[in-house]
Image (cartoon, rainbow, N blue to C red; front, side, top):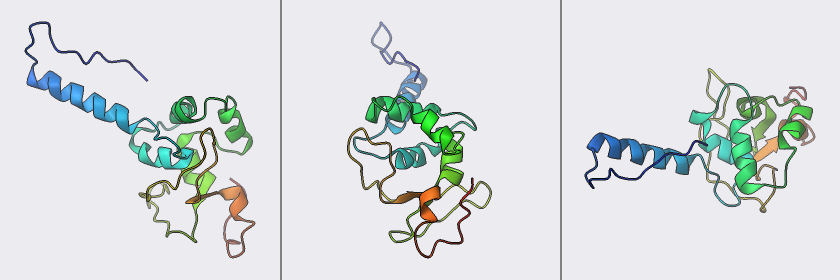
Length: 150
């Protein structure tokens, strides 16, 4: 993530517009940092407005903060047929229907909102119990409607 200088001007007087910019970037930075024990999918759901169409930029942010030893996370997701952060939310996971109803955007098929993350152990790249990998969901009785392929 980019580094921004949030210090006030040398004269001690800060322009109101500069203060708004500083506050915006501080808030944006806090939103784009995973919480301790937050799972990858819940973090991506929180950061959905900042996701790029392709690539694993936010997955890398998650990996750096919560799972530093998962050095091949992007490669593992690629092996699962997941080609980026957005694709992970669209096609890589499904909501655990036993815990909550899954409301999805009609245009992009990304889940709309999520309850707070249930949490995972430090260093884990697995989703919390709110989510199920789509490939695993087909093994659960009653989910035969899911397409096992991405």
